[in-house]
Length: 311
Image 1: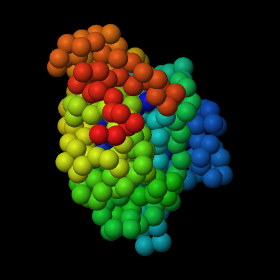
Image 2: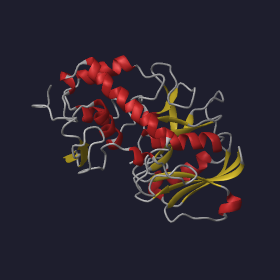
Image 3: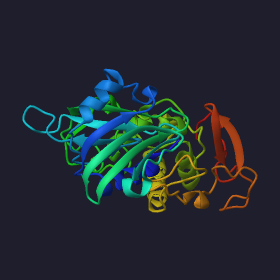
Image 4: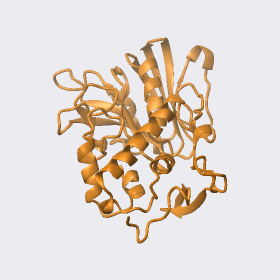
């Protein structure tokens, strides 16, 4: 599933290629891909026709495009909200080159006029169909800070209001986050994956961050000191920033950026998907264990399992 670096790579591409464009038309080829939109496909397309995209914002794994003039005072009151799920892609295409190009898993197409580089298609492609698009109302942020990375608007789509700020968000209160994690009675990896605690971290970057911090995924959060929690958060921030610089992590064709290009951070992974291979720090074979219906990868020497989950 795309995590923060992958979604941010897509957001950055949309910011450069579609902000300022007007949606001339919208086509829904699979109703399920707009299942979260009130009123279904017809209402989805009606709300988008004629709307101008004025930004590209992200919080954790969610991204949205605020739409101009949708409020009573002319201010943005709604946004095109996207969640990529496991395999969702937002691809920007040049109609002159693509023609009637149709990806076999294309679910939605927006016809854009006035994009920075001319007319464009914005296609939502989703092989496994866990992703979705909707036009959602914007709600003010409780703290008055921008709702997401990439937009100055102090508003967030209502379906995203329960999602916590992520580690790359300038408005994040890191001291408060440290205390929130320490008050929880759970394992540190479970806390990192809880999108209501801090968003954007998924299985890949949680494993990589914990390896960098030399912390086992089962270590109890309520027994961790502030410096250790901060070390884990700093490691997660560091690894996601590095991944972002390489366009994210691609293991197959299910994640690409808006131009269809893959990310290359998979070549830099230290433990994830490296079971049996030597730890890059100490040479001990990396171990794979089952965790929450997925896998966790650790170095048994660098990240020894705590007794009863506590150190």
